[in-house]
Length: 203
View 1 (cartoon, rainbow, N blue to C red):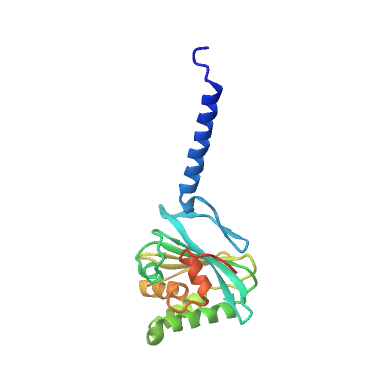
View 2: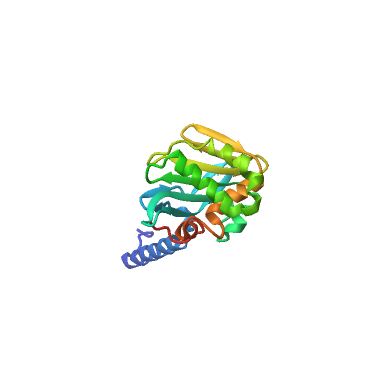
């Protein structure tokens, strides 16, 4: 009987417990929660080569004057940043994960990739052209809900993997140019870049 708790004391302790747990929930890092954009969910983090990569953000690729949603992109990095140039240039493990929202022909995707590289590199495009063509050969016909990943491993190159097909393109300069297509000064659409750099993801 000596250790029986006064009911009013018990209620006070319970209320304090709820307040503490509620505060902990509010203060929990955003990475503790799954992320979703236009119906596509991506894990808040993933482990590659023993390193934990966090989801920097998610964005939607829109196309045509009707702003048709083509894919959701999720950017995984070692260290979060809102600086696209820094992310593209950093010699760190990183991945861009695309989830298709509609069927996309191989021709349309590879044309978009080539134009993206030309826009980013300008007069330096000829230095990368052979590798761009090699990358294009790794892109399959893409169907709704397909996934394609672009993973940069410092010192090893950029791995493209989708639908059981994969290959590696060498060169930090190539990887930087690819990531700048999404994160540079002239992304395919502003909302895509904004979402990838931690802003609102909408489509």
